[in-house]
Length: 313
Ligand SMILES: C[S@@+](CC[C@H](N)C(=O)[O-])C[C@H]1O[C@@H](n2cnc3c(N)ncnc32)[C@H](O)[C@@H]1O
Image (tube, rainbow, N blue to C red):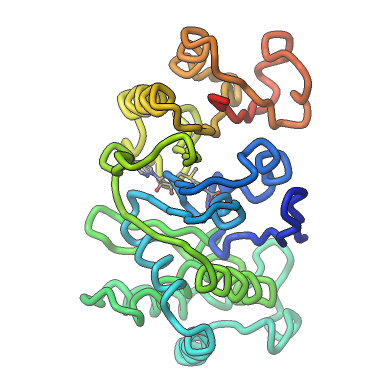
């Protein structure tokens, strides 16, 4: 489904990376709260880039501390689309992976719940093994990484401490929707003013930022789980550093919007709630349908998660 931005009538596109915590589905609620336009727009924890790629600004910056992700996104920006598609097709043939867009699902006799898992298991392991032996991170490396993600469990990306891709095979393949998401995303990146950086959020340089700029912040959530939270990926110190960093932006008049959850599955993010209480001046926009136009205190906190966008404007 394509979403139109009310302000600009730009077609909203999803990321080709099925990112956990990706904000594509929440865009109809998030975008109307963001500035209609800005000079620099920083998507500080960009992940799949769902927000920045659909934002309106003179220059859009994407930052993340995952070097594989930033390498892949840079490859999407720099490589020729037709060459990437050709190479993906060659790899699918080379490893004997399924190609449902060409032969249909019936051809692979796959059942609904397991999808293409059985068929792709061995070809996927062979491809993963070859990938994990590659030393040089060039365009071939990143095309192979993308194909691994497409065929991996839940279309995710995960590396172990030694930099080896370690997810098992998934249910899907490079189907028509995946292909069109990749093409649209690459076209958008190649046509606009997009820049990438790979850094911890504390090391990103905001010295040139002022009131005309905007920072969108979608960190790992302290009280939920995702692959990027594993191995102590996001802890209470990170959370507090981030909130202090946001106060610093606010003191300089730089607008920000922070995505987060106030509670999830019975857990509360006390650090975040205390920060909101203490600051008093930030606005909380409730994004979860059940919480729209309602007061957080009056709702059943165990029911689901409470998605919010916190802004300083
Ligand atoms: C919730 S995801 C962002 C999802 C994204 N907004 C989207 O719509 O696809 C959070 C991202 O923060 C990144 N991250 C985690 N710790 C970080 C840090 N200290 N500095 C910068 N990025 C970090 C993770 O790699 C992950 O990609």
